[in-house]
Image (tube, rainbow, N blue to C red; front, top):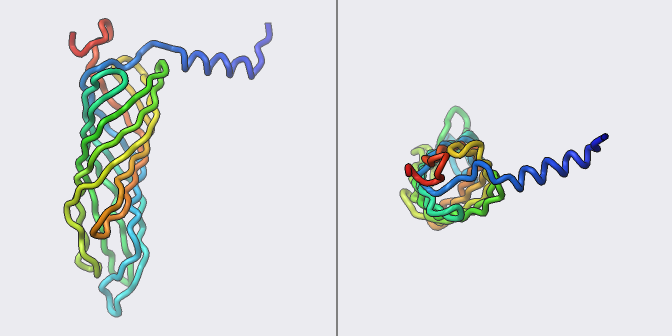
Length: 200
């Protein structure tokens, strides 16, 4: 019997979506994400002689450490710390930076599809921002902003999962711009593989 490429693809898709193995159950978890950050900061004046208006490099490698607790297969609370690659302003022989990182707390809504799940997050981020003295601009300091996120996850085993997500901290007063982070994350869930409950 010959199996066509279309039939094979259909079988793989149905198997992946319909599989019920390794579904992540309620319990504590923690993880680490690495990816690309973008601070979206705007052009500013660097205090050179003469002063120079320059556009920053806003993108680079970022990281996120997070932990949470799953209330059910559909909802979790999550906390985290995120590091963003700083915005770099270069003019003449001078380099100046805007640095940002944050702590956040969010609710996470999930919809399981066998080993896969799609999710959305919403919460608040407490942002720490510092501005180099060489930049002719003020820092908004430490501020609180709404945070939103979307992603898709895959459960490798009952305890290990990976996900790809995009998160945004929304801009606000004091010159703070949107802060984006697209990351690939791996997490460990403290779940008993046999009874499916937290340390039962």
